[in-house]
Amino acid sequence: MTNSRIIRAAIVGCGSYGAEHAKFLSGFAGAKLHAVADLDGTRAEDFRQKYGAAYATTDVARIWADPEIDAVWICTQHHTHAPLAEAAAAAGKNFFLEKPLALTLADCDRIVAAVERGGVIASSGFKLRFFPAVIAAKAFLAKPTLTTAHVIDDHWASEFWANDPIQGGGNVLSQGCHITDTVLHLHPTGPVRVYAAGGNRHHPTRDIVDVAAITLTFADGAVANISVGDVGVPPHASKFALQQSDGAKSFSLYNRLNSLMKREDKKITELPAWPEEGAAVIDGPFITAVAEGRPSPCSIQSARRTSAVVLAAIESIRTGRVVDLTAAPYAAAMIC
Ligand SMILES: NC(=O)c1ccc[n+]([C@@H]2O[C@H](COP(=O)([O-])OP(=O)(O)OC[C@H]3O[C@@H](n4cnc5c(N)ncnc54)[C@H](O)[C@@H]3O)[C@@H](O)[C@H]2O)c1
Image (tube, rainbow, N blue to C red; front, side, top):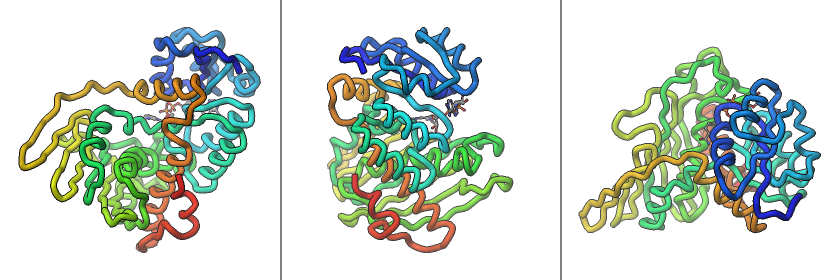
């Protein structure tokens, strides 16, 4: 790897969200987009031309072998995350891996083990933690008693790869992880138990859970309700919303978590909305961490915990039982 403070970047997966990272990387002074790879050569070549990479390839091994590359953005279907992350770490490449970490606990464990073995800096894609309104909310209310949150999207086509049980896992695993991660991030202690109701309401051809009402209990006794589904965006609250109270203060995050309303001593303050910056909010901190050799801003271990909580919620839906997160197989994933 080069010692330059300009991070030489590669993207694996030249699809819709790879484009968000490519847009940022091609315009950011601290990085240079060096290579792009996709199984589909036309997509890779389109990226090369549009975002100015030195080369495009369908051979991902070329990325791992290229000594010029400091960090790789992995933006592919979820079932490929573990093998690609393992290959990146084995090649000594720092990597940014899109959410969710993976679709099984075993794959999450593979990724964590590969990062620890390889000693690389690895970030997960939980960008909502870095939204200015979320940061301001966390500073305002440090010890919540009660959280209510949701990610409720418009209907996804059943044929969409993210609804494939192997490639995507369905809406609850694919997008439910985003709001679950934000809830975990905004609680000072870890989750200890989960109970959930839900099932498959709108995608009968797919063996997935597409709607979930999840109840979490934290070690300090705080509780959270999380609703997830591709059942129609709520017009007022928006696709992403989150509210917390601590007995005295409260806040509402809405407008896709770009707006914050705070309430204290019965006085309400509404802050001006922040513009949504997408991947930029997390790519910048990751690049800085790689350039300065500092810890990941969004650790792989914390992303494993998030996936483990969503998987436990799905287990609860399927069995009708409360799941103890302090016992096997989830306990190890709660450490982050
Ligand atoms: N953070 C966010 O807000 C956000 C939003 C959308 C998607 N995502 C995530 O981004 C990732 C990609 O989603 P997308 O919507 O861009 O998918 P997409 O289908 O648009 O693109 C995925 C690309 O990866 C390529 N690919 C698949 N396997 C590959 C491999 N082994 N080697 C090289 N290329 C490979 C495919 O050919 C495709 O071009 C997923 O993890 C998804 O959940 C994150």
